[in-house]
Image (cartoon, rainbow, N blue to C red; front, side):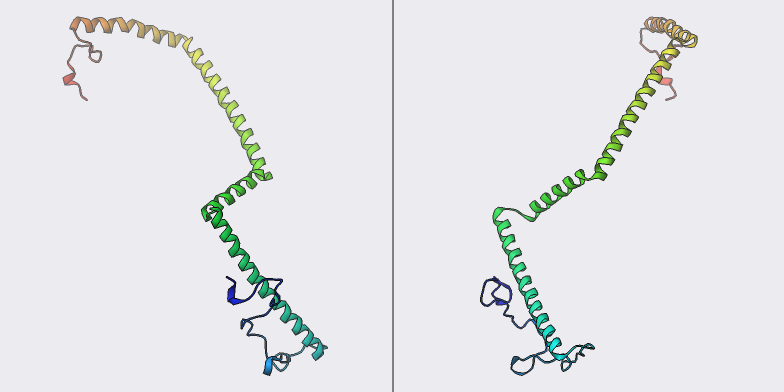
Length: 189
């Protein structure tokens, strides 16, 4: 289960034993390390060979630890994926949870709250303006209905209605479109 066949248990006595993955560290005969200047590197000014060797040793140990931690992390991620799989938490389920969490975080943000307040205020003002406009239109229509022009028009319509229905009864038909008693067959439509 562990990558490269290495023991990744941090409490293991084999911890830190590397496979052939570190090929960039110069090694001399019988596994001894080669000095930096002999490996093609130049020692920085003012640094002794002993200091350089100590730093190389420390670098080697840190790189070993990094490799070990990467292996442990990979194993933990694999174990977590197995647990999620056994719990039935599919990637789609995880995506839904992440989206829900993100949406919740957005709704709790100050920008979202300010935008919501602004839209609410704009909605209230728009509703008030439309209500005022509706009232004004209703009032204007009421004024028009009480005007002399509208009353004259209304009287004409009321007087026209009995004439139209009387002429239709005399013909024996309900043809309101042709007051001169022509048939609809000759209509231009």
